[in-house]
Image 1 (cartoon, rainbow, N blue to C red):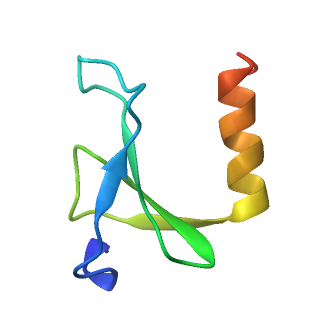
Image 2 (cartoon, rainbow, N blue to C red):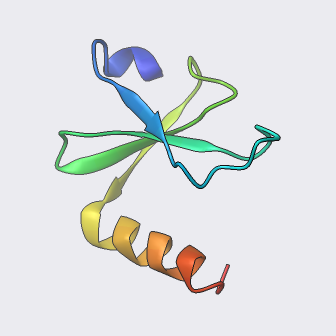
Length: 65
């Protein structure tokens, strides 16, 4: 749950759409990047290694996913 990261600022991409439908948030300052659903901030959190996260973001940017 998100309570694992108390006091940490979560941020959403500036590229997130205005419909607020499919947004993820990340928290900075960790070896693995915590990611959560912005619509359910108290819900589950997954952590992703920095290399995998960079590949994920790159694939989105390039239109691959």
